[in-house]
Image (cartoon, helix red, strand yellow):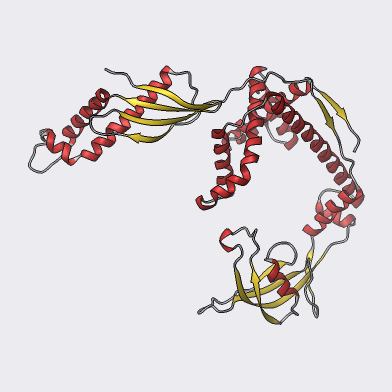
Length: 417
């Protein structure tokens, strides 16, 4: 029987595009198989089961038989390609441009996503700078203020117009609607981006209990694209104004926040946390420099197939619908390209140097995490396995080992902030 043929029409490090041809003989064999199956099972009035004439079967099940032939040809083609080629597919193939006419070969395009593989000629010799920013009093105070805001109360304000930072309760109704829906009061904090600017301006011109009309326009960068630039006239009723009252930063507050003996002890912990964050930020900066050097030194590509896949994942995560996908892709494509290059670099080095996380690495990490949390390692391992987070842990450890090896190949210079 004539063989299925295929040839590559395009490729990058993460995909192959093939054109596949299934000969007429194989299509005819698939058709005969389908006819036998439908003849065996068909129940048609006037004929005994299993004795329906072939022409009747063809007429009655024409579309079903055609679909069976195509599906059989696609399956057999894919099995042939996987068996004969050196492809390492990472997902099911995508079929397009399928052409199937009676008496003609079946021709179609197949796009296959494959395991990317690149070789880095240069993996070290770079000079990297590491800067650990000192912890400022302003940063400490900002963290303290955020803790106080979490414990703050809201107190009504009488006899004054609302200001930024205050909470208002308002009711907004669109003017001009034939049957406007009753407006339900809702609360928002002025200046926090919880309402469009024009509406906030209207509210800040009112005293509690007053109502006013005005024109508002949705800004051009409004999250809802359908409303961007839209204008309408609204009626706004201001019911109540409240201001935030922060609790004093004292020993009682420290004990309420956590197990701290005094405000001074809480401040020390905050300072230590910020110092640790500064170290992590500095280390992350070194890693970013290193990846940038590796990408430029090796001209690492960003395969379009991987970029598209990552953009789709971003869009799904953000709940982007089909109408907004093109605009979203235009914004996030550069981010996806950088991430793809990063992953290709780390995968290449990790594979070349055999730095993948071992079972021993994973067990040791789980034991350390369990000790820090005060739980049994076996229980934590089972929990991670059930939540399907072991793969994530394995990738994290592999990445850490890869960066550790890479940093040994370059020079890191400490720079004062």
